[in-house]
Image (cartoon, rainbow, N blue to C red):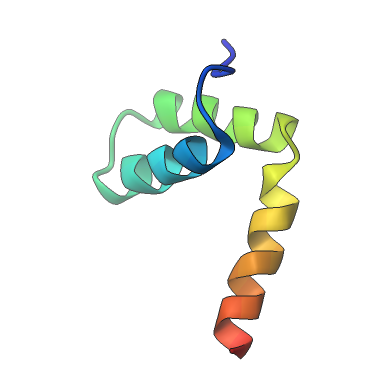
Length: 54
């Protein structure tokens, strides 16, 4: 299942919120798969590391 109508930002926010409120693990996995397919997991990790440095 693709989440193409979601913006990258909305997809990442949805993923973090889903993990926070502990929704169905299958749904979280679907979001995670979409994030990886878009290549966002790499850029997001870099941004998180930069936030910690600054």
